[in-house]
Length: 128
Image 1: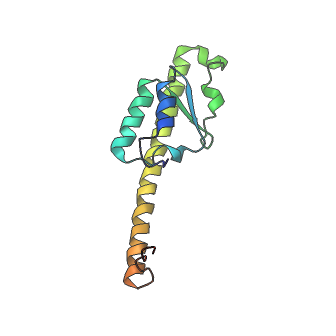
Image 2: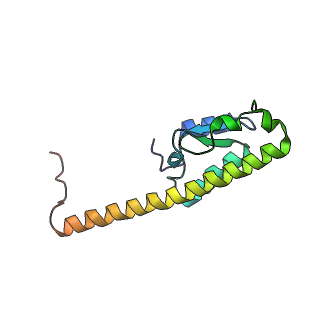
Image 3: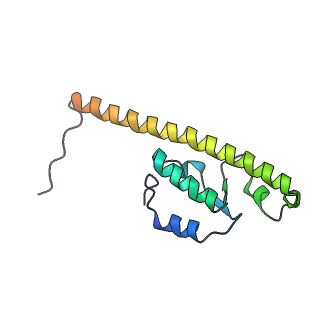
């Protein structure tokens, strides 16, 4: 399934089967915000309702620091502070990556339009 659509059965199975404070570990943070804004908001809302913590292998906050086994997180205020910082960072990155993704899509459309105008891209012939 494409990361550009919200209807991903395995993702929803994962989200609906999660528990409070589970960590949603993604390989790269850009895997989440390729959705259009309304779909991203729905996904973000579901993540927040489930009280999941998002961690990514390519962020500066290591996922291990979000673990319940981290001694400093036994203090509720420390946990709350780290969750706020992590969420802010994740959502900021998601917004920037989404903007970048939209820009790349737009530039790709412009290149195709330009090459069609030059006759470089022709319409595909139907298979016989």
